Amino acid sequence: MVYFGGVLGLIGLLTVALRDGDVAGLPAVGVGAGLLGLGLGIGALGVLWRRRVRRRKIARGEPVPVGNVVDRARALPRLIRAARRGTYGELPQRRMFLWVLALVYLVSPIDILPDLLPVIGVTDDAGVAVWLLTSVSAAAGLYLSHERDALPGTRNAPPPPRPDHRPRP
Image (tube, rainbow, N blue to C red; front, side):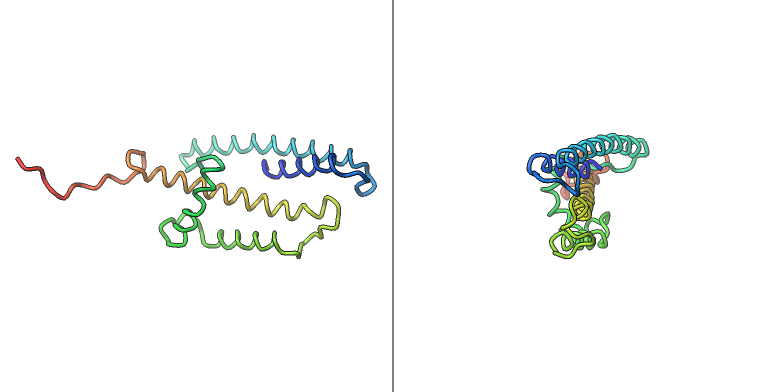
């Protein structure tokens, strides 16, 4: 919801800034301001919803995604490599297949809603892009959490290996 609100707000801002003529018979400033307000509202609801879900997961003891956007982007190649090798079983193969399908849909010229329709035409692309970003971000955050838990000295880390030799008296 946060990403979707951001996309709507950006479309609204661009409509106000760059559009001179009417949008579907409505003044461009009104449509842009409406989209900007709607985007801000949806983004704020998304932030509140995300905080609520995070608190609930922590209370249940479920894994919570960690890391910022840069950390998650850097972890994405490691996540895909580990999932393809089978060393990280938390990411189903069908989810990676859906990511590929979403990328193909975003780059293909075929759309469910044609882009020629003002405002409505980009919503299907925006929805797919938002889903793709949130899904990839959440999976990478969970993978970072998995990596951090596997480090020595953390709560779910495996015990350190025992030395093969014994000290001499």
